[in-house]
Image (cartoon, one colour):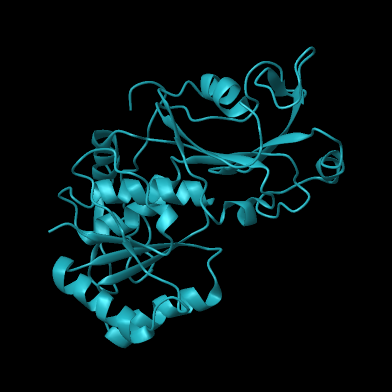
Length: 306
């Protein structure tokens, strides 16, 4: 029986990559569903699937997050994992789809839940913005703030795995917003540090008109394909502007995801007893306390074939 994956927003559920990838359940906000109904729905999922891994963004409304903890407390269950992720909305959607793919593999629910932290390091999530004056998710210098007021300014921003911000300037003869642009002072290429392994690029278009992401960034990152999707509803608030294009480079192949997760040593949580990988339990959040001098394998991908 696959582990159930749940989300707090319908736009975090991307189309499946194949016919086997299951969808995700929606955990609605308090103003959209009474607590009694939410408790019944969660209990049905737990009875059907055994375990539920709920993924939600760190930017979620306080009342919605409190609802999730209330459900777990009232059901007195240790079979509901609450994963709070500080990734951009499109990055979370990509990670949710990867967890959906892994949920039907021969991994236990504990491994699927704790795999979220591992896989997040392999998602390159960012955006092309027309302004960074309201961006508070990535460090922004005073100089960049000042440049935001210049007409036609654009910024390439990487939020994960490492924050990075560059100014995009039009090359000579190119109109503002065209794909013939480079990062000021960065020479040829996209300017943003990309993944050193094979990825595909998912693009969510907002109201900003530009082909920099597909014409400059994608070739520089050597992605094997570009997919387009709708922009998550929370993206403008997360990035501080509606004039944007969000993107996320990710591992698309389930066999690579499987290999990556399977390469990490599995442990037993000393608190709840569930299986995990990495240094923290995905269900009770207890840190791993390994024996002294014990070494554990870590999943690593290198340039070229993972």
